[in-house]
Image (cartoon, rainbow, N blue to C red; front, side, top):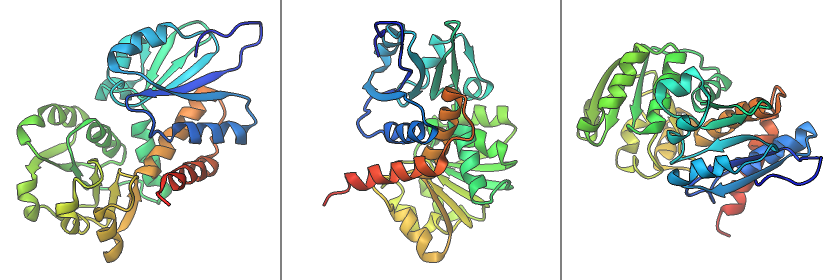
Length: 283
């Protein structure tokens, strides 16, 4: 990602984070470039939070965009000239664009990506939702739920005392929100949507319960798959979405931003991600 030599520069993009080896972004973005007929390059770089400023400063004119994973989503906001309203609201960006005039902008495609993933299944609105987890993905989920016109949310976390920031965000979004801990799960039910933002395995103990609290379950995990929550949801006929749905939809928005081409080739990107996951499965 250093400055290329000579008059002709190949356009480059990349995904940054730590760890980064697991990322499906290279497979998806390269598939998009191939489908769009673009001779672009997309790489992956291991970059820690304290290394991002120096990495960005070292980039040349050949770089168009960066995809950002943890732990870079918050610190990226300090390295750009403009921040889109969604990224500013939730305090996290997963996309950085480099403009021809030298300016940089930060964006969040996780939120609209989640909305689009639901829309692909015909879900464009709901009244109530339960969100499992209280981290960065939960924050993006709350913003997405506002986009789905949800009015009431219950957030289930391990430690209620650490949910203050999430409650502040919910208030800013205009969501009526309550917080519960996992010791109260038997009292939690009767929602339109259930979204688990926790890593695969973290919900196993309560999988049977949460698979039945709503007619639609979105488990943001995607590898290894299926999770116990997914297995339980499938068994009782609950409509199920997974993290790959979110991953592909947020990536299509990144491709559209970076290339200026729309729509991005969703089917090709999803197929590339699935193929990459299949290749990682033990023989």
